[in-house]
Length: 304
Image (cartoon, rainbow, N blue to C red; front, side, top):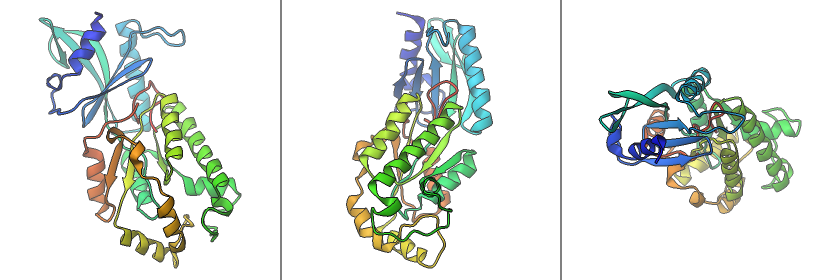
């Protein structure tokens, strides 16, 4: 058994951590081992040599942990908390404890990323997350209108799933949205995707991108009462809105919305956006949900 294997076994136990931990989720890629403990995520670089990167020595793993933290702190403040040590003394492993330093880990906050359902308040939540965490929002409404040569406030009152909202147009929009997200992740930048992701296929494509980019992902589902949704759509009739969804689209959208049954609890947070934004944010940032592979698993390329 290698020393890293022993460390991984120790980190799988709640008592290893200084903070209260009731549940530990593990994620693994070809270069990293990640432990999701609720409030915090710990990522260790595997002792591997893949030609394009070499993590075989402890000094190299320390260096790359520090570089990842430095890079992502600039891009995603309040997420990357620093590099912690794993030590060994009298045959026991400790996190930032006594004894010889035998490994390093990047310590991060667990972080949510995506939202769902028209008029649900998802853009409000995305904007507040962006403000609080310093992360760019990629909004499907803006991507869609840009694709079709429209200005953000150009109102397109078309029937459900017609015109720029046809299935083909929506496929192009989500394809472009994920492409833009991929470009940001490749630069080491976290992103918030503000879109309904109303179909299982759309969500599976986001999950695939997260896996391909060795990144973590969380879906935030905004679920206010139906009457609140309808009231918000009615108010849009008199307001200028980037979104073209209106009350006459609601029945069909609700009928075709595919519940997030494909998204596991480890990457799914539900919030009631009838409640104050401050209360929603407190739930999002503190809830004990795990990430997929998110905002936090792979070297400098990191979050979706």
